[in-house]
Amino acid sequence: MVSRLSLFGCLRVYTKRIFSFGNLISGFHYKSWVFQSFNGLIVIGSFLCLLLAVACGYIYLFLGPPVIRNYRVPKSSVSLSECNVFVGKWIPDEIYPLYNASECPFAEKGFNCLGNGRKDKAYLKWRWKPKNCEIPRFNVHEVLENLRGKRVVFVGDSLSRTQWESMICLLMTGVEDKKSVYEVNGNNISKEIRFLGIRFGSFNFSVDFYRSVFLVQRGSVPKRAPKRVKSTIKLDVLDEISKEWIDSDILIFNSGHWWTPKKLFEM
Image 1 (tube, rainbow, N blue to C red):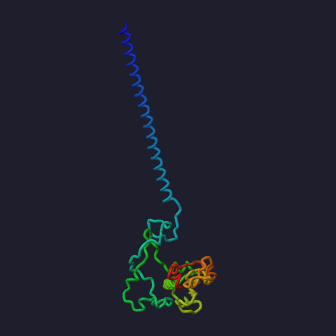
Image 2 (cartoon, rainbow, N blue to C red):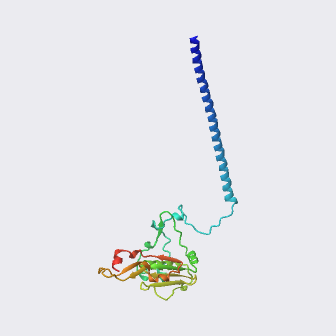
Image 3 (cartoon, helix red, strand yellow):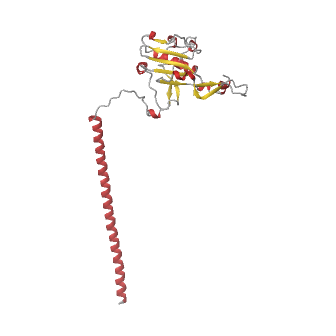
């Protein structure tokens, strides 16, 4: 009797294990089916999204309104907002120079190297190339048209003046009537004159220059100042001639060359 009960107990335990294993297998198959169904839904959804994207692209490219582009953008993989024109290098360019200083009446003779006897011309054939972008080629006719009715002002030292001269010479290459370009007061280009203004009569705009090496006013020598102090600078007061350029459309400042110990203490 005891042996029968023991046998029955063993069979009962064994039976429970079989059913438990069966339930485990059934659960596994059910979860596997659910997982496969979910993957199927993902595949179907992805395929539908792909069809929708293709359809939208077709409508945009072939059925949408034409896009009119009336501006020029430098050919570059970098957007203009990321273009740092101050980081780059000079590269050779056979198209340069863009003007002949000997044919420009507003270029100072002292800065006309070829006119003063220099034989080589390789130094003229360089242009600035930013590291990650391209600067559009200078189009004199576009610039002349864009400057109609405007006033451009350069303010600074001799470096600004030579930049001003170069700008005028560049613009003159696109003007047919050279006599329509003149200095408003009949002055010759000179570093002794604080104001020079060039008028482009055919296009109704001017390119002016004001000499102001520090851009701010100079002051008197303070009492008990060292003997080496010859003048002071009022950093919070603009040059007194600043009122002359407040109505300009484009204003170019330059003063960095003068903010050195040698210039400051020996002026």
